Amino acid sequence: MKLPIIVLPLLPSTWAYTTLSNSTLVSSSISSPRDSSISHLDPASLLSRILIPRVPGTPGHASVQSHLVEFARTKLHGDWVVEWHNSTSKTPATGDKEVPFQNLVLRRDPPWVSARAKEDRGDTGRLVLAAHYDSLYKPEGFVGAVDSAVPCAMLMEVLRGVDEGLTRMWEKEGTENGGNDGLDPEKGVMVLLLDGEEAWVSWGEDDSLYGSRALAETWENTKYENGNHFDGPLQAISLFVLLDLLGAAGPTVPSYFEKTHWAYENMARIEQRMRGLGVLETKPKTPFLYEAEKQEWFQRGYIQDDHVPFMRRGVDILHIIPTPFPGVWHTMDDDAAHLDVSTIRDWTRIVTAFVAEWMDLEGYMPENEAKGDGGNEAESRYPEKDEL
Ligand SMILES: [Zn+2]
Image (cartoon, rainbow, N blue to C red; front, top):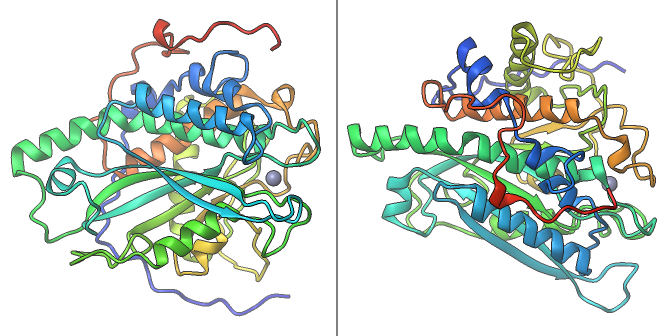
């Protein structure tokens, strides 16, 4: 069934969005994500550390939490605020026990905002990038590689990829202008590593999205005191980009929402330009983001995922999830052996460039120092493990 096209107002133009130059796409750090973060072939990588069963409330889950925080502490050098958002809930699988769900929130705002107040006062609109780090309760031993260990590792590498560029840009702006005059909202970056996305027994309103439901509700009820530009953290989300089921070869991701198709187009153009410049490794017949030219909008259901509690509260969503889902979805085959490292690297390049454009980092991105894995920091190496 085809429905009439609803014409939505164009997006407010207050957001500068600066296209990256060819040379930045080719020769900045964007082109060389570090295998030490995102490659399942490196047993010491962050991704390998996440690729274990991590059901909320279990030791594996706690171990993954500590690796994520350690990465943020040791690999990110900017002034990132790292916080946990905690909630508990019963689940249909665990009886009367309250299971803890803990979302990890990382954000970085301009230093003059941070200096004014460690408290968030509503000066900064944020690009939010999200993925879930919990894994399915059953089947036992499920490690959820595309679902969603890879997106989590990718997002941490994306933050590392833009970290130095943000520092350089804000240092220059702070020196030249003393920061912003407060008339326009600032721009910041936030990553949400969400907990409890998976259903424990069967998917439903009350058995799924435990972490994101709790977080969206908390933020809805949080109001900034004397909010300068935004009333609360929900309104301060400029765009909510949710990554899920990424890491398998040959993904095809449609544009799901007409309202945010402009953002999809921006990301798809990055992919097209990077393919043209030879920056990407994969050579798919169909691009990952193949609907840049989409003109007709058909009514269709959206995929139930962590964006829903935010979307229902009016947040704009860009959902980066393949249709069809990877064939390994929710099977024991969703493991390291079924990942494609070239696809993971290419997604990381695309998303890093998208964030760099959003944050206007043209001219500030560091040079690509080393081809391939620039992440051979000896101090970051864990003892080698044999089992991989
Ligand atoms: Zn899942």
